[in-house]
Length: 371
Ligand SMILES: Nc1ncnc2c1ncn2[C@@H]1O[C@H](COP(=O)(O)OP(=O)(O)O)[C@@H](O)[C@H]1O
Ligand SMILES: [Mg+2]
Image (cartoon, rainbow, N blue to C red; front, side, top):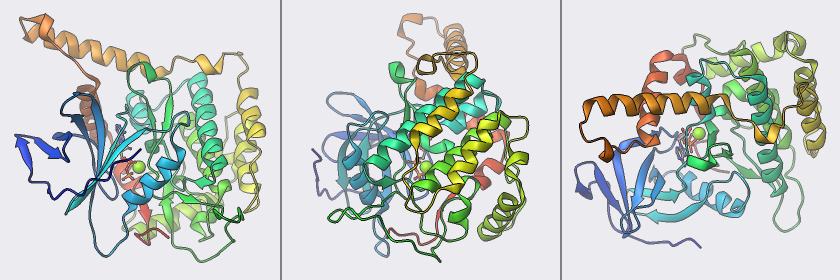
């Protein structure tokens, strides 16, 4: 159960250098940023008494807009207990900020793809594909659409859970069924763009109300991106968000499915085409999409037991760091390496790789408020 503490603190409530007390029980490490959010940043934190680590999502309160974090918590609370759904522990509203205390996870799939030099093996792609599809099926079964499906919003778990793919970031998610009547939301046109241009469905670009089909189309783009290392509309030089959206849309419309999936097994084209062919209120045939992925598994690898490519790379990185620290430090027993250090390093390394990543993959809710 969530605790709602109305505490009058602000971000200057420092415990010591780099630590901020959040509510009665938590501290946040200001120098351990895990991610930049569109409406708030995510930091590593800790329970002061148990010393257990958490992720803390912070949202600066803006009186002109409804809280996206509150909406995210509402949806996440509803999804609790599902496989690959991050656990939430607390919500702490203060004068300036709202905080969500939730499960600390590992790197996101975009970061992991980059540390593998944008090359994933077939078994990694197929197994990730199945897990992402299962997450979509689960949240759809709970009447939720995500509306911002992209590699940055899928994270691996920590430690032993590093082979579980978590679906995150429900800030733009929405119920697609009425709670009382169970009716599907009505079809609408002329909606403002919500999501991330690179992975958005064509219907989303065109301003149609989103539904389950759009999450599936975005998943198709992720799988093609992981297989080819790029998408034709990535890295466009544009001056504004709206120019990006227009140019990405025209590329999406003008690139034939066969061309987009050239060199890949035909099941990729079938996956994308089937997602695009869904009607607005259709329930996707998840078994059919799963079958397409399984058909590509010509080597009959057990896809639920794949050791992902990035696990080896992460382990090597960790060992290298450990070795470096051992050389520097004469008391090896006291060395305590943790994933967060590698997380930080990876992030800064990958950011140096490309600036387009930043520009490409910004998520947008043009309304900047929940409906
Ligand atoms: N629980 C978590 N543990 C570790 N890192 C996280 C966690 N949640 C988010 N992140 C990192 O922060 C990034 C942004 O978080 P996200 O929830 O997607 O915010 P936004 O809505 O602004 O995109 C993610 O892509 C991920 O890299
Ligand atoms: Mg995100």
